[in-house]
Length: 638
Image 1 (cartoon, rainbow, N blue to C red):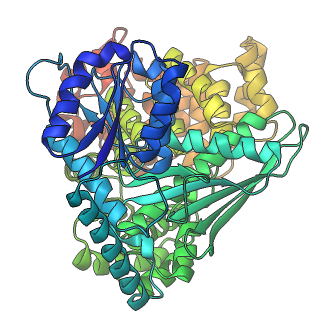
Image 2: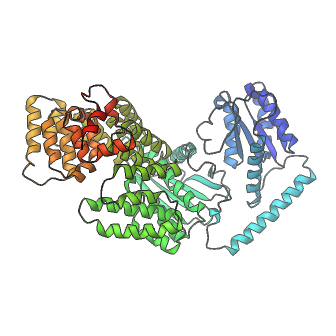
Image 3: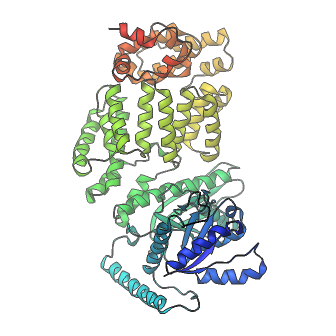
C-alpha cells in the first residue's frame, strides 16, 4: 500500500475528508491536514510529509489552482513522478500539470460516496507498480511502516533485480519502448548560464501544457527529479544573445545518453519569445513521434534516428512532415511490421504523386504508390492513410466518390486530423463551405503542433465568408507560429485578399500575386482595375494551366469582371475546371455565382450531378442575393 500525501485548498476540505477516508479504507496511509490558511508553523511538517510520501494526490478546483501552497505540493509530486490529480469541480489543472491524466469527479458536492474511487485507486496502483520497476533509490521512509509495507519494499527490490536481468537479455532494444510503462521525459539545461536555465524552464512549462499529447502515456520531470530513470532527455542550450536569439535542442536516450535527434534554431533580432515557442513545438512533435515508435515496440537506435528525423523534420516546415521516402523505406524494409513508418511512407508517396501531376510525370510515382498500397492493405487494412492514397491514385475528379471515401474513413477514424483536412478540402470543392470550416477546425484542434492545420482552418474561415473570425484566428496564430513558413504563407493569402494589401506586398514583393493586383486592392480605381485586366490579358495568346486560371479568376471576379472570368474558365477542359472548383465558392466569386451562366458551368463539370445525387446543395443556394432557385434550374439542365 502507498503512503499518500493529500494536497487541497482549505475551501475544499469538505471534499478532501471523504477522499482521505476512502483511501485509508483501501489500505493506504494518508497524510492530510485541515489547516485553515497555512503558515510557517506547518512548513517543516508539510515538507517532511511530502518527502516521505509515495504518492501525492492533488485536488484541483477553482480555489486550489490559485493556491501557491497547493501548486508547490503538486509540483513536488510531479517532479517525483508520483502525482495523481483529481478535479473536484471540473476545473482544468494549471499550466505545468496538464500532462497527467486527471480524474474528473464532476459536480460531486462532497456528500455520499466518493465518485470514481476505482479510477483513483487504479492510478495510485499504476504509479506504485511503476515504482516497483525502478532501481531502488535512497528516500526517507514514513515512520511506523507496517510489516506489509516492509514486505512490499522487498518485492520492489526483487522486481527491480528481475527487470535488470530482463534488460540484459534484451540488450540492443529500447528499454523505454515498453508500451505497458509510462514514458518518463526529462527536460534539462545543457549548461549553467542564466539564459540556458531560463530556456529549459520555459520548455518544461510549455511541454507540460501539451495535455493533448499522448494522454497519460508520458510523464514530464525536470533534471532535478530524473534520478537516472528518464526514458528520454531533452537538453536545451541558449547559444544566442539579446540581439540574435539562437538555441539548440537535442534528444537523448535516458539510459545510454545516445543522441537520437537534434535541431538548431535561430530567429531575427528581438524574437526571443518566438524562439522559445518553436523550441517547445519542435520538442512536442518529436516527442509525439517517439511515442508512436514506442507503442509499436520500438526501433533500433539507427532506425529510430531515421524515424525521428523523417517524422519531425521541422515545426515550421511540416508540409512534408511525412519525411523523405528513402528514409522511411529503409525503416519498413528492415521492420515491415512498423505501422507508423508505413503511414508516413504512403503519405510521402501520395504527396509525390500530387506534385508530379503538375508536370505530367505521375505514372512512375503512381506505380510505386499502388504497389505499396497493395502491400500495406494486406498488413494494415484499416490504415487511415490508405484513403488518401486511394484519392491520389484516381485519374479524374469525382466529387461524390471522393467524399464517400473520405466520409467512410473519417467515420472509422474520427480523430485523425489528416483525414479531416482532406475532407475539408473535398467539401470546399462542392460548395459546402460551412461543413468545410467544421472539418478544418476539428483537424486543427486535434493536431495543435501543426501550423499547416491552423493555416488551413484560418483560410477555410475566410473562404467561407467568416472573415472577422479568420482575422482573429490569424492574430492568435501570429503569436503561436511566429517565424514559420506556414504562417507567412497564410498571412500573404489572407492579407492579399481580405486584409491590408500593403502588408501583403511587404511579405510577398515577388510572389504569385502581381503588383497590379495589390494596387487594385489598395485603390480599386477604374485605371488600376484596367491595369490588372491588361496584365492578365497578356497570357491570352499563351497556354495556361489550371493554377494560373484559378489566380486570374479570383482577381478578376473581385473587381466585377465576370465576363473575363467565364472566358478564362472556358480556356480549360472540364476536368481542369473541376480540379479548381474550390475557387468558385469563395467570397470574391459571389458575382459569378449570381450570373445565369454559373449553373450550366456547374453542370458541365459534374457539380450539379453531385448535388442532385447527394441531396446536399451548396451553401450559396440558401444565401440572399441569388436570383434563381438552384434546384429548379438544376432540374432543367441536361
